[in-house]
Each structure stands twice: as structure tokens, then as C-alpha cells.
Amino acid sequence: MAALVALLPVAGTGACDAGPPRRQAVYGPSAAPALPSASAAGVAVALGGVVHVAGYATGCRRHAEGAGFVYAPERIMLTAHTVAGVDRDLEVVLGGGRRLPAKVVLFDSRLDVAVLRVPGLPARPLRLLPKGAEDTKDIGQASIVYFPPGATAPVQFPAVLGHVSPASGPDIYGAGDVTKEVRVFTGPHVDRSTAGAPLVSESDVVGMVFAADMDSKADKGYALPAGQLSAAATAGRQATTPVSTRRCS
Image 1 (cartoon, rainbow, N blue to C red):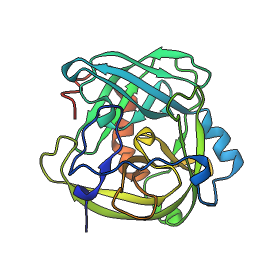
Image 2: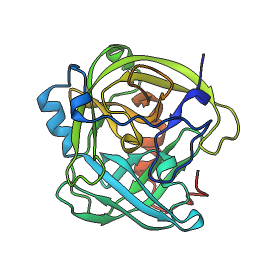
Image 3: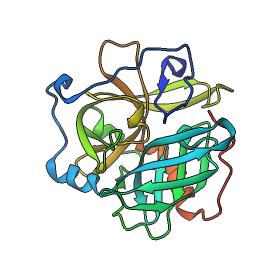
């Protein structure tokens, strides 16, 4: 069983690592290896369903930023560590720069998943791969879709999906012992700005990026598979009351 303590959470500006400091890898277009990408049609759908998330955590005087994706009407899914401690100015930024206020309606520090409610959100929801369908997406082509720093529109980078396996480690606050399913993938751009980005295969979301392996020579990342996200997705779809984001991670 893999140990999550070896993973580096990919967080917004100022977030803390869950282990010893590691050198952060940065990849540019010239460094991207030739990997297969998801279908053009699937990527086009995903580009319209990905947002940039920004807010401010007063408790630690931190601007928080990350990616998120629309999975249901007026609902965004993203990593919990991105919005941990955020208590003001929370908003989502759509392609083209339109900004909409958001509220956190689900915050799971153990799984590292949060859901935002965004009234009036016009973006088309992406489809989470149905629970139990991971076996058909075990190895193959995919894309990471996210907003690079300073970008006004999302972009996609190719990725190759690996296996889904159980992993254990602490929650986003370094406490407890959490066991969850994790999908390994490789791609040319896995860094802090990809936290919360969807892994898209065809037009399905097969996982959500939450960590990068800085100790690996490969450009290796880790995602929560779609099946692992299904319970949070269902709960967040029905939730309307804002919840606490606790303290900064």
C-alpha cells in the first residue's frame, strides 16, 4: 500500500507542504514530452467546464488560488486544501475573465475535497466517470485542464493514466490516518497551479489532481479517482448552506 506522506500537495500560493520541503518542479511548453492527449472533442467540452478559484484566508494572511471544475449546475469541485482557511473574497473566474462570487458548501479535510456553490454559474457541467467504471480507464490517454498562473483562459496538457490503488497518510492538516483510492498519472505539467484540475478522458472526468511527486524522476502526479469523489459530489449537489473552511492547511 502506497504512503501518502510521500506526496506533495499542490496548493495555492502560500499553502504548506505535508512533509519535508521539496524542490518544486516547473514545466514549460518546451519541456513537455510528446505524450498522447485526450480527444479534441473531449478537451473542448472540458475547457468550458474548468474555472480558476481565488480567495483570501484572513487567519494566515494568504491569497489562495487553484483550479476547479463544474460537475453539476452551480457546483464546482476542487481540493479542500486550496480553500482551507478562506473566509473572504471567494470567487470563481471563468474563461474570458468573468468573476462570480462563491460559497463553500462542502469541506472534507480527510479526502481533500471541497464543493462550491456559485449562483448563476453558466458553465456546462462535466460528467464524472460513474463509480465502478475505473477498470475501463486503468491505463490510457487523458488531459489535465487548468488555468496557468496569470492566464485568462484554461489550457490542456496531455497526461497518461496509470493504475488506481489504495494509499494511506494524514489529512490536509497532517493529522490522523486516512486511507483512500489514488490514481497515478504522468504528464508534462504537474505543479501547484494544477491543484483541483480535472483529469479528462474523452469527455469524462476520471479524477481530480491533488498532489505531485517531487521525488520522482518522472513527471508523476496523483489524482483522486472519480469513484472516490462520488459521495462528495452527491452531498455537494444538494448542499446550499455555507460551511466552515476551518484553518489554513
